[in-house]
Amino acid sequence: MSAKSASLKDFLTMTPVKIYDQEHIKSNIPHREPFLLVDEVWELDPDKKYLGIRHVRPDEYYFQGHFPGRPVMPGVLVVESMSQAFGGAIMSRTVGENKGIPLFLSIDEAKFRGMVQPGDTLQMPIEVLRLGKIAKIYAEAYVNGKLCAQATLNFILGETSHV
Image (cartoon, rainbow, N blue to C red):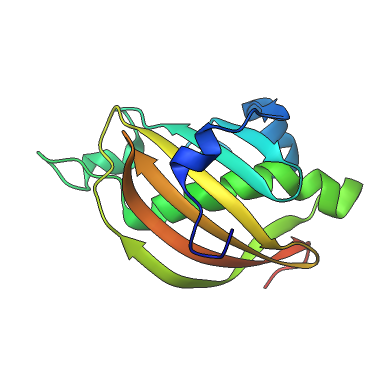
């Protein structure tokens, strides 16, 4: 697949090799409630393809002010959810017991195409384009089969010092 061909339909036809629950994800990234934005990750092809899942709860803290009367998940949090799905699945394999964290280097070609609302389930196909100290992924986010967001995300993995 090319950087712009991750497709939910293709990912859903694959059988998961492993399914990571929130406990596994929390063992790999430092995020915690209320900022843990991924519920599970399906490993479809080790070090290559993953599917992140986020059940967007109506009581999420950000819905109070974004927007009263018409709550919408902020696009930056959709991108963060894609990032956490990636980090939650791969960090122990890339940095071992170092317990470093993945940090954004850049977000390229982000596009927002639909709203994510309370009660929605985000399905986020992730394709790893480069994996190492510097990693690059292409990710999309879908609700009910409709593309809501897409971006190419670049990270430094295992960073432990303050930036």
